[in-house]
Image 1 (cartoon, one colour):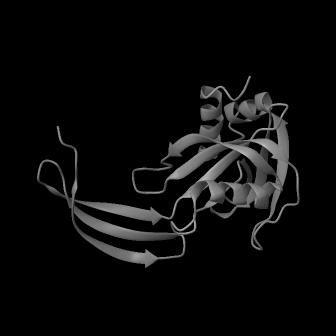
Image 2: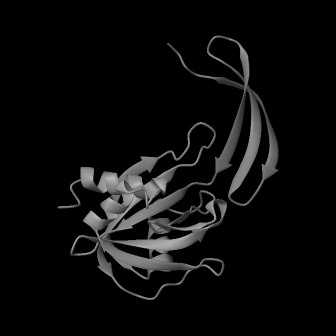
Length: 180
């Protein structure tokens, strides 16, 4: 069966720097009309830093939509498609943790919420780390936290870490044999 939905028209209701919101009139595979609400996002990169001892380096920061401080991997948005994906990852790693990486290992791509959002998050593991100075954006207040991978997984299992890209990076790192 062909599951493709045909776009008939699109109406934008908001256009911002990192996302836009629109409503599409579509035709379903059975020929009936429907509406889709879509949030367009520039996309981003998330990096799971793993040190020589198998520890991960996470960041803690306040996330306004949830009104709480959360653990997550260093990450950031792409510069509207003009920025190389790996370069974005290296930049965000340096800004948010101070670390640079000798190796960037692709962990794949994830769709955070495909029911309404077209964002793609590109995941990497970073190894061969060298410490340096953090340089967060002026509106970014973060601290980095180093923890053993077992503790990281325990925080995921206990629901202390809920960020989707972070959970997926842990899973993909384990699947790719990056953790002993």
